[in-house]
Image (cartoon, rainbow, N blue to C red; front, side, top):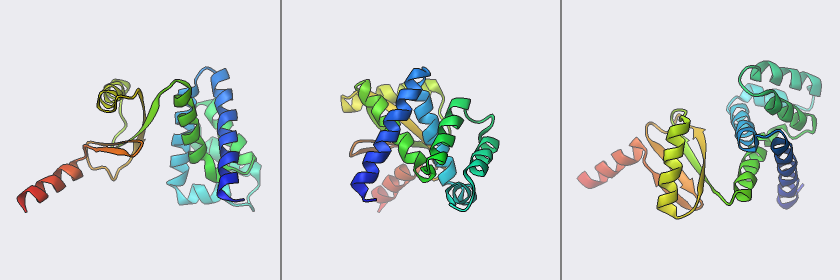
Length: 180
């Protein structure tokens, strides 16, 4: 399958899953959960290999995901992930989640900011961050927060092609350059 066809297929899955999420009354939450689950799967070679291996029966893959995600994700998110696994799209869960987030934001006339933080952010912090990014860009912003341990401290936000780097690493680099 070429890239254009793959993108169309994944956008179709994202649109369909977003419609399910809307019907369940939690499009933003479910899109974010699906994206986070995909990132967790991508971050575990063992889990990723188990659910993408064509030799492993689908039922076994789904049972594994239920065991791993039980208590960590909503039952609807688990069902959506299991549906994707059953359809042979396990390796694309992160991308489908990201597409769902983008489509949900577009329907609300929002721009998605990808925000990387070393720690999970609470709702109040995310709201302040969205307000600050809205003021800086002139666009209504929806923050998609990704916990990234490589961000030593602070935040890195990407809105379109613009990067706002408030990380400790960036600040230290600025100091090094100023002293050089």
